[in-house]
Length: 147
Image 1 (spheres, rainbow, N blue to C red):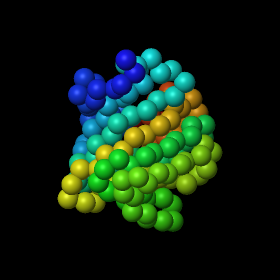
Image 2: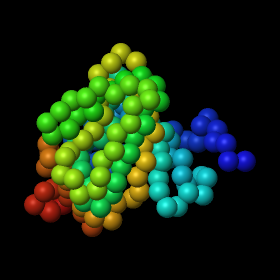
Image 3: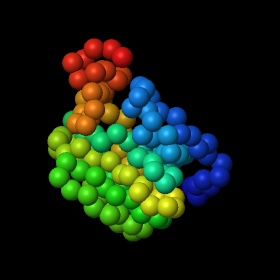
């Protein structure tokens, strides 16, 4: 049956970010919905941000489109030159190659819940606020040296 039962999908707050960059997402809880349901062309994650949590470090992808749909609560979408309050029913699109770093911050007192759509990136991902770069399948400093 194609209906997805969230309670049967493992929820995790693990991250690949190296320290100290991992602390920002400690209050992000993710369920990856695609793999257990046979989706291979794109990824979709059910994300819960606890108060104070961030969806990611502020970033942009050279080769991955991203799309989010807010389901409950509220979060602030932070971009290069804007802060936009997002509530249930709001959506945002982040086209690949657009050098506008973005992430969601939960600055409220309650949980924020959203769906995030994308796919595993194969090109570089840039983090304008910190010394971090995703390249060649791993995290490096912006000068491409290892952590």
